[in-house]
Image 1: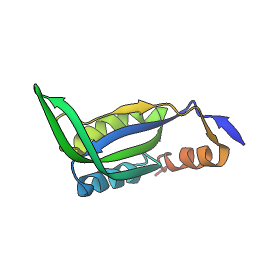
Image 2: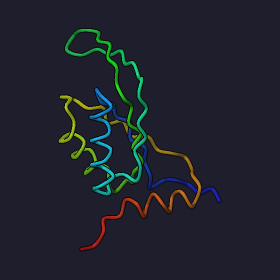
Image 3: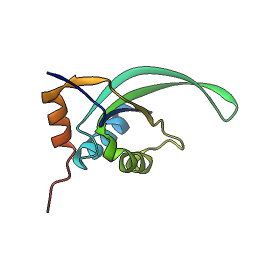
Image 4: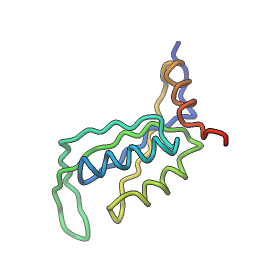
Length: 113
């Protein structure tokens, strides 16, 4: 069964190395701020930074989370990241399978003490 995914988000971010991306991914999943983080290495980014056009090898992070976690996730990402201005681009999926959405919601619940 496919359901609307209004309460779920995909956050895009990049990191300068595989090691940094893995460290960030583990921290976000460990803290229940993300259900899953996909790492896509081999990304080449061309961007303007401080008035110059730059080119860099990066790793793209696809972070699966909930609307309720967005503010805490952004704060955690800023604290974990080596960049002065880490990418934090939030996408809204249109729909997803019910079992996947159930898993995502369960995975991002903070365990009770």
